[in-house]
Length: 246
Length: 89
Image (cartoon, rainbow over all chains, first blue to last red; front, side, top):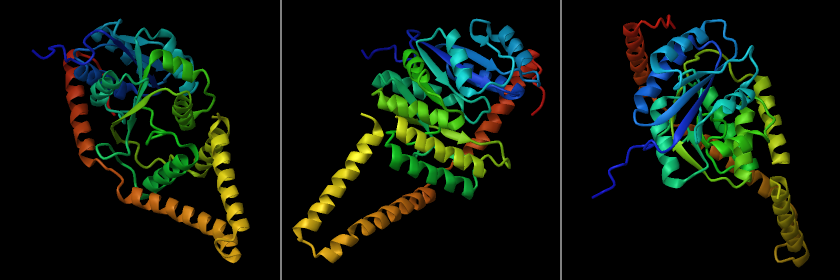
């Protein structure tokens, strides 16, 4: 008889999902709903690190806590916008899971991929499972040609210089073994998406096993120019920094 | 070993090979002097090719936007029933 307990998680492991938020009043509720929908047989907690959102995000989270339980949704807010890296570190302090998932609150990362992250990790015992948008079963929606060009160019440059061993360096939808995240994050100093690159490159240099799963990424922030000249300069500086220090 | 050391070692090895070719005159000297230029140009072209091919094959998922909208509507309905005021987008 085949092993009946093929449920993901098997209630053996606990997963802490850290979601940094800033003005995500509607999205945080939807994300929470979707996470509970897709992780029915999994032991998990959601840690919302809100940076003093003025739009009432924390009020919504408190209502969600009433609905789902304060042991399933933790609100660990901060007074003001302090950046992503420190948000993860802050959330990590309260995480009681064996694994930590980091994801964005704006619905570009869909919780329906969480089971595939968990499954991949259980199958391979990887230290890190990272979502990649750039493979066949993955993909991006909402990017124009220019954006795709810069993304592809940036990726080829990063692959050539850094040999990172992953196809999507700037992605921020990842599952880490908790101890691995603690180890890697303590040695990272960059900000923004260079921070995400630094995390995965340092982990790769330290010899941690990294696996990838395809994810789709729906960019709903149409029209905002997220890639201006200064972003490109920051990126290039980040690449050189990583080239020389990792 | 730091990554930059690996890259520099690779460059040193390639340079040594090139200097060896210069000394050994298997290939006529005039050609050998131009080899680094050929190498850099080919390398650059390969990079551009990779960017172009990747751009053409860039995976897209328009159906995901539709599915996401469905999920959002479903979630909003759920919260309406539970009395959680999520406001509007």
